[in-house]
Each structure stands twice: as C-alpha cells, then as structure tokens.
Image (cartoon, rainbow, N blue to C red; front, side, top):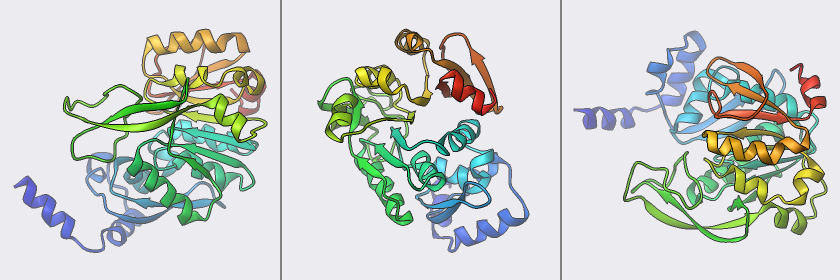
Length: 291
C-alpha cells in the first residue's frame, strides 16, 4: 500500500505550483509538509532585497527551505548569523558545501566576495554546480574533501544512494554495513591556500561530520595568520576537546547555536553542540553581532 501511495504521489502533476498556492494561504505543520516534496527550481528569499534560486531535488533541506524559508526552518539561527557575517566577508570558505546553501547566501549577500566550495560526493557536487550555474554566480568549486594532508581517501554511501548528508572521510557514518566505498580526493587547506594565492579568509562554514580537527590542522600556519570567523559543526565531546585545544590560544570566543530554539549561548569552552553548530569568532566580531 505504501509503495502504491508513493507511485501515485510521484505521478501527481504540478506539485510545485500546487504547494506554492497552498503555502501562500497556509503553512502546514512540519509533520505534514515533510511529506510534501517535489522536484523543480525554487526561489529562496534571503531578505527583502536579495534572493537566489536552487534546484529542489526532493531532499529534506530544500523541502524545509521551500516551506519555512531560511528564517524559520533548517539551521535558522546559524543561517541568521551567517547572513550578518557575510555582509563584510571578502573571502568565504564553505567546507562540506553540500548543494551550496551557505555559499549561495554568501554570494547573494555580497556579490563581490570570493566564495570557495568544497564538496567531495560526486552527485552532490553535481547538484552544487547546477545551483551555481542557475544563479550565474562566480563561485569556485572543488570536488575534494579538506583534511590534514593531500592524497586519496574514501567515503561511504548507502547502497543505491548517491546523495547523503552525513558523510565523512574514511569512516562509515551510515547504518548500512554494506555501504559502497567511493574513492575521493583530499587536500590540506594550507596547500590549497598557497596554490590559489589566497591572501586571507574572513569566514568559514565547516560541516564535515567529525572531521573538523583534521580540516583545521590542515590549515597550518594560516589558522593563526587569518583567524577566520567560523560556523562549525561539533557533534561529539571528544572532537570539541581537540578543537578547544587548537583554538583557545588564538583568543576566540565560543557560542553554542541551538537551531531548534534559536538561542545562542556564550560558552567558556567547546563541548558537543546543543543542536549542530557553534559560532567561533573574535571578541570584535561578537561585539558587532551584539553577542
């Protein structure tokens, strides 16, 4: 019966138009709209003046953004901070870019910014490039995972699935014990910075599913030199402890971002996030944000 319903739903025409009409008058609860997905191009509003387009391929994040927008749905507090930070960021790194939501926001906010995306999953990187072309943005894209060295590594994708949100380097995060191994390129950030003659990094988003320590270690001397502001995912206490050891000497402040409630809490040291992300920034940036 469930398969029949799925087939019938897939055959329903004009879902985007129908759901856009419904949304204009009424926002269904998340428990309902999570099932009301579709495929097609959607417009994403950043603020009253700025927006961008994305290809909705029927996945969770795009569907959440379609129904709730950037300000009320997926990673709402993180996105709100990111929008403010992008206003004065000339060079932005989106590490673990997925389909590029953070990178697209950065370019929509600051058209003159140099934005660099890193996404190792072949199909996801394909979707990322589609979105960049769709908006005619000059975003630099690398189908590579940043790490603490350069070479080859593996990611693991569930059987029959070329798209996955929770993928990291050389570790199977999937519940599928028979997940498919996919060989990828890895690169240390210091080499990338040097090769591409990057003079500064103002802002980074790092979402690499427990590989954050390796990413920042791979930055080498440039971490202290650039001291970028970061929105960084921290899912485990042991990862947090290692990051704290690495970042504390640089004078950073830490803010736990609870995207479920929208609350942002200053922390004395890093620990597993209340939701997913932390803001890591200088006291000067925190003051500008009113934190």
